[in-house]
Length: 151
Image (cartoon, rainbow, N blue to C red; front, side, top):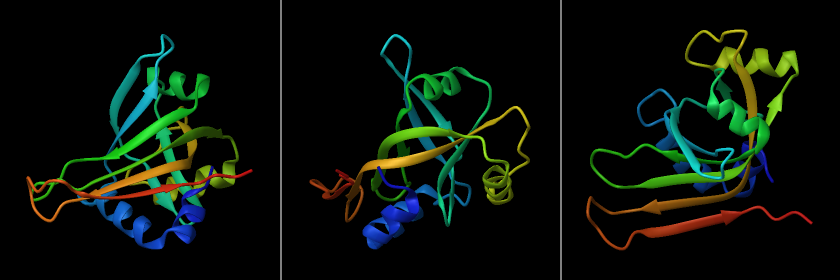
């Protein structure tokens, strides 16, 4: 798995496209998919933060926080655009971060006040998929894939 910084170094053009789609509304909005205890999917809109050191997510006390603590697998997908159907998705594993210095740095980069009871997760990236369309309805899109395989 790779941090966002490692992904960005390995695939800079793809990271620029992904960052643009993740922050297309100014605020970082994405859909987060987690794995429920019964194995089913859970999907929620979230506001992760990309910092120079990585991709992070503050999670309020909720079922999705329980999902990430129990089974760290996640998928993070961009919101749809108005003019074109471009998509960007990363998958990997989330790890809860306890370090106060990291939490403080990510909180400083967050768009709102961070509450003490919120948990911070680092999102490591295993795979990435970008679908680019020339205009709405154009098919097929151009797909760019990236995967981090460490031995």
